[in-house]
Image 1 (cartoon, helix red, strand yellow):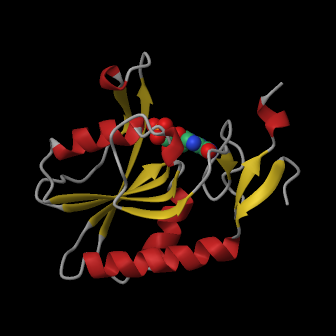
Image 2 (cartoon, protein in one colour):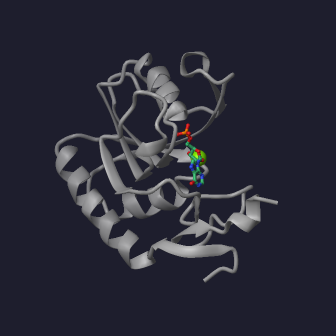
Length: 179
Ligand code: IMP
Ligand code: MG
């Protein structure tokens, strides 16, 4: 275990099992369709890679990088697009793949932006959900794990851009960020 990890919340095995279940569910959902599966960079990259490799569905993939800034209130939060999709999503079945939903502000703004481009459908799958922290009125359509309000790292998730390559999801030691 990494020295800055307090405890392992989700082991590699637990994640792998759940990802397979989600992939099977999504295969059923998209049967007869060819979804555009969108990886939200950077945090989702590991989950996305495992998820799509467990899906049988014929699909296209695309990538987007966003961040949300605001002055505190949900309604005034703005989404900054750091990297936009390359595909036109009009009339496409779009599946957004997220790492974690926390306040929900990022995803709320992103969903609004993508809906304006008139996809045939738009679903959200997230590996992790921290519902206790929600500020924006948004819920994922499919969730890997509902977790407690802890700051987690690994399996794509970072703290100051580090730890994304840990193969498990762990709780970051408070001593790392409370100095
Ligand atoms: P929000 O839902 O708009 O608050 O932001 C979600 C984003 O915040 C995620 O995509 C992550 O990049 C980041 N985030 C939220 N909680 C955590 C965490 O526990 N560990 C690492 N990143 C997190
Ligand atoms: Mg992120």
